[in-house]
Length: 164
Image (cartoon, rainbow, N blue to C red; front, side):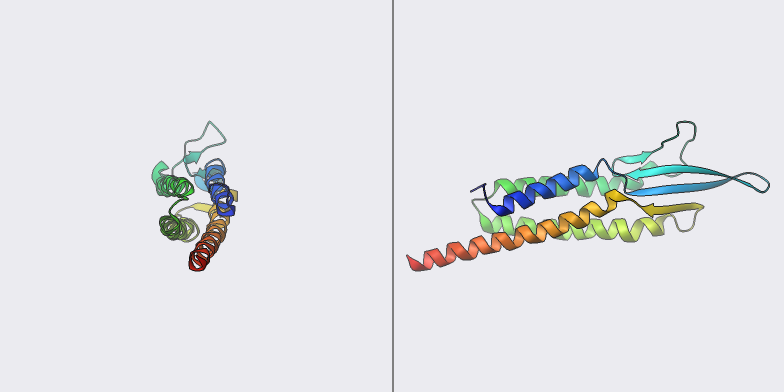
């Protein structure tokens, strides 16, 4: 049935990833020398869809393809989780899809938390993780809870089969 607890958690996972597309993953402060003894500061937001520049007068010196892997992993995760929501008749397939989603989500989290701070370490750019970086952590917890509920359903079905 589609009206199970794990479906609610999986829908929340999809919502978490969709919300992540609209929140910045990191706030970037770029320092550049304008003259002797003076620095110019530009602020950018690294989104999953690209770099957003709040001030239209400056052009970012950062490659816009930096966030492309995050976007790809997010789209892959959304597709897998939506497919697993509608594969409720095959709990074993659903369990495998959730395990795959957890694995990809861990890779995404490692990429965000380990890669982005190191990516800009050698430049005159300072990065601070923003709100969007924490949505994969929330979705990881929801995926693990959904996995537990699917296991609980499988155990219930097996015990009912044993009684017949």
